[in-house]
Image (cartoon, rainbow, N blue to C red; front, side, top):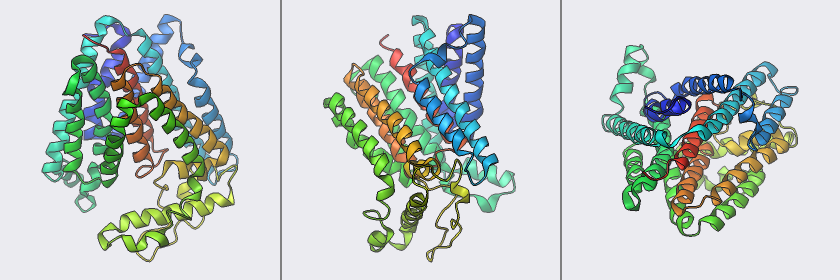
Length: 394
């Protein structure tokens, strides 16, 4: 068993991947439980404020303050405040978990490694089994709840995203333990899971991260710093793309009838960019996406010009928090890539690049950035990766 300070992290290492695959929304109470445990430990040690003195606390506080300020002009101030509270809780929990990594002792390394690797293996087996069976367990659960007509195999989209993100942390642990090609085993397991799955977004995220992998390995420092600059500039330029290069009129002839979801996404982005132009500096306020005027307009091919969110993190931040929020988020993202470039070992930089690129791709194609389960998943993936960096050698 790990020592007392490491037990909240051990809990996460053992449960995050399996629960993330079985029921992704359960990662929210899992994060809350681990963070609460950390708070108790900090109180007992008389170091309650230690997690909030780190350099990461500054951008976290800036984002929270600006999001809170946006509630004053939000379309629904009450909903905005609730979303800000969730964002603040996730960011504060992340600071607590990352700070707790400092208390890991040498004797904690082995149980934490075993928990991470074992949990990922279980999660991979569960997801592959579900994909091959047509999501049989999920289908049974829907039938049990009397919601058989609501079942769709895309219910596994979240599970595929969770497994692929966790693959990079597990690969890092295996690389540090075994070296050589062993580290590719978790990535291969995730590739197989996504290959037989149904999520196009996860497949694209997988392709992009795998393309970046050799560059991050051989040219890690400069490649990651280049990505930091590219991510910063791309986020600031995001509202310009839907009306130009990514215009749905430009691409409509390239999509078949079975690819309408991709074209629908372009229509959503175009509408979002138009609304961004109406409030470019301050934005429409936190959580405005689902209430944006005109969002319920029907498209000829089906669907609305806005669903509950734009399916694009950069555009959603621009829409709701304006240019000020976009700059804050872009700086935070660029800082993560820059921090990854300072890692000492090639395999560490490669794994960090794989995780960051995967997260960015998924965040810009699939999920709403303020969905609680998604924020919790990002927080836990970041914390688990930071912990894995400390589990070096035998």
